[in-house]
Amino acid sequence: MKEIVTRLLAERGVTLVDIARLVYTLQRPYYPALSLEQCLANIDSVLEKREVQFALLTGITLDMYAEQGLLPEPIQTIIARDEPLYGIDEVLALGITNVYGTIGLTNFGYLDKTKLGILAVINDNPQAVHTFLDDLVAGLAAAASARLAHNGWVLLDE
Amino acid sequence: MKEIVTRLLAERGVTLVDIARLVYTLQRPYYPALSLEQCLANIDSVLEKREVQFALLTGITLDMYAEQGLLPEPIQTIIARDEPLYGIDEVLALGITNVYGTIGLTNFGYLDKTKLGILAVINDNPQAVHTFLDDLVAGLAAAASARLAHNGWVLLDE
Amino acid sequence: MKEIVTRLLAERGVTLVDIARLVYTLQRPYYPALSLEQCLANIDSVLEKREVQFALLTGITLDMYAEQGLLPEPIQTIIARDEPLYGIDEVLALGITNVYGTIGLTNFGYLDKTKLGILAVINDNPQAVHTFLDDLVAGLAAAASARLAHNGWVLLDE
Amino acid sequence: MKEIVTRLLAERGVTLVDIARLVYTLQRPYYPALSLEQCLANIDSVLEKREVQFALLTGITLDMYAEQGLLPEPIQTIIARDEPLYGIDEVLALGITNVYGTIGLTNFGYLDKTKLGILAVINDNPQAVHTFLDDLVAGLAAAASARLAHNGWVLLDE
Image (spheres, each protein chain N blue to C red):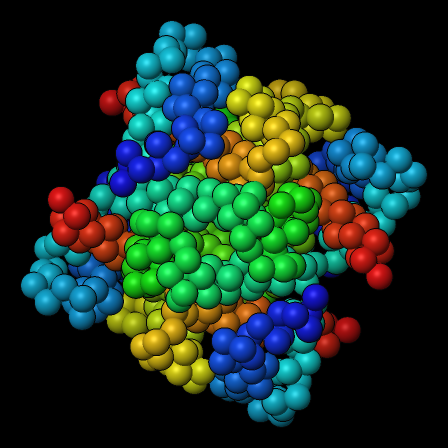
């Protein structure tokens, strides 16, 4: 199922390298020797979790249906317009971020607010509906960063 | 929008009185003078919150689309079969339960596990997809119970 | 650090076998071949997570300090009396439950409400303050159950 | 109890005006007519919630006890050093942020990462332990911003 999710992300305009760049930007200041490959490997591990796959499949499906005008009102308009009080996109993203503990929260919020890298690209596309996608990708990058931080600690701890 | 949500719940087989009965069962032991009307009034207040309305609209839409076979695979099969590891239904319900603080968590889990009252009815319907509905209704009853408990405290406190 | 946490739990009256019995009761209906050893192994894995260790250390410290009357007011009285609206005990437990996804929520709430097994024992001790302990132990059992359910799925999936 | 909490914040170096300035910085771009008084009024409403008061009392007590070296090891060192993987400070702050829905998450993470205004002041004090305080204050500002955003919607909606 990881392949389905990875393909779906790519179809929506987000490659794993795009997400790895977010992780790299976030974590480089703390790990000067960090490579993009290590960031990719951590994203790969996050994407193996069922809960993460389910959140991505659900949120991206809602984006795509809203984009094609297939949802019933009033939820069609709410998702299509990325209504700021909707909140369900953040709820799904939180499900991803939490798989490596709450230390991911800070990075999730920071990415979601500053719209770093690929997040600005998907957010600025006027034809597409990316109400869920930007939060889910920020959640993925935050979870991968948390995993990296936990492993760093484990190494220091041994 | 509260009317749209109330109507949607009724179309899916759940009246506000059904939910009030869950609140009554949960809270009666602590408040012997509790009436069904007070339970209904607390549900009414919970239903006024945007976040609650959005969670209900989103989850019930996913149930209805899965019931009609309208979702893409693999999410269609996952939701239609109420796959036990899906977890996104609990995530949405948590968004409802949390509006009156984490004290609602315990009641949410208890209702979701024991399938009290209306929850057993919607869960046992073999034709319908109620993957989200049972969690959302349990979340609503838990949030209304938490609101009631908070107000009880406030009264004693003044 | 796992040894410190295990010893601390034992000093507060909870052995890993007590927690394994909760997992066994919850999961046996779904896995008839389940053994107590498998339950113990899953608790062991949960206890290896930093976030879980930190939640246990923090909550049990607050219990012990409240038991000895060492906290400042009003938090001393609130924790010592297990004030029903306190909610911070549930928040910490949620940090444990979430490490294996939100599917643990239901079992956490159910255990916290029904006070199965060891939970009734620690809850009925009038000399001790176990405001955090019962929630943390319920959270541990729920997380271990979620881990078991995820692994069951993984096995079926391969 | 709101007065106790407000006084405790002040003793730890944070006035309600400091927090109002954070809300103002976050929300001004969306509401050009926003005044500092409105920000203060929203913080005041957030501080009336029991769950918020309890989170503040618990976290600040842990900070103060760690500052005085009163906690048992290993939790004393973990909190005193603001160990990056601790995560319990974020968990408590999340309990505050969530009272006005998950839309507060983004602002919480952004504040916690960028250490705006008063957050930098309390974070840079080498004598004090503010492991919980910075997260709790960021959570308060995020919750007040979410309340403001919800009320803005309500006004437009009527």
